[in-house]
Image (cartoon, rainbow over all chains, first blue to last red; front, side, top):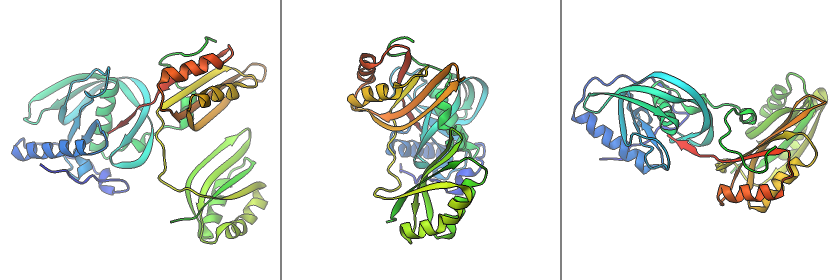
Amino acid sequence: MAVLDILTLPDERLRQMSEPVTVFDDALLAFIADLEETRQAGPAAVGIAAPQVGCFKRIVIVDVSGRKNTPNHGYLVLVNPEIAHWDGFEMAREGCLSVPDYTGNVIRASRIRLAAQDPGGKHLEFEMEGYEARAVQHEMDHLDGMLFVDRVVSRRTDLFRRKVYHKAGPAA
Amino acid sequence: MADWHMLTLVGEDRPGIVAQVTRAIFEAGGSLGEASMIRLGGNFTIMMMVSSAGGETALRRALAPVVAEMGLRLHIDAVSGGLHRHLIPNVQVHVTGADRAGIVAEVTGALAGAGFNILELESDVAGSAERPFYLMNILGYSDRPIEDLEAAVSDRIAGGIAVDISAVETLIG
């Protein structure tokens, strides 16, 4: 077990496409253990992707189970993940272990249907929504050399945001 | 450690202001830090951190031709502070209503009374001249729960304004 070094911008390797995993062996399991240890060593990240530690394989880890009132599937290792269906959109703020000292608003699909493999190569399918779906989309971007900074929308977009979560104060 | 100046430039909007201003600073050996540039009411406004070995004198000399040609007003202050001091907002306050004087003072006064720290504020007047509609979005930081801020605002705000206070959570992935 080891905490791996995290690549940070402007490291060009973060822009690289990652390759599908084809061999499901002990080395893969060992790497996933290191990747999870690295995620937990950082500042409260809900996910991590293999290319963030310089391994250009299609592997992400997501775990939003620590967040209150959040539908989730627990600790997830997603190998070769593919989003089969998107629905709805929401804007929310994101940051990234690979982009220190910057956060910004990003629009993501609010619900996704996802196919992936587990670390043993078994086929998995999930339907996800909200925060967990956002975390998966954020991590999967890394596999295609994308970062949330590529998707940040203007702060002024907030002025006309479409979704109002709740009202406060006297009604208009 | 860089010595920073805060430069403020304002002038009637036209193409090329940013290009010419930043070119002059670059050629004078200056470099930019954080900046905010936006068109407000037909004016183009620039506020930006600039680090320059030559200090204010060199910056003024470098910018004088551009300021004259583009019809800009320039203000320079030496500032303490520097890069990498971001605070991450944890509360968003969204305000909408028929435009009238005093909305910002009322809302921000109530928030300040609850210890809320504004990190950024953007506002706009939409609608028409006859029926102006005010929108404001504030991002800030509060140690107190949302309910305290809501209570502070609802005690102080006159009717006709919708104030939505929500938590901003930053997903770190």
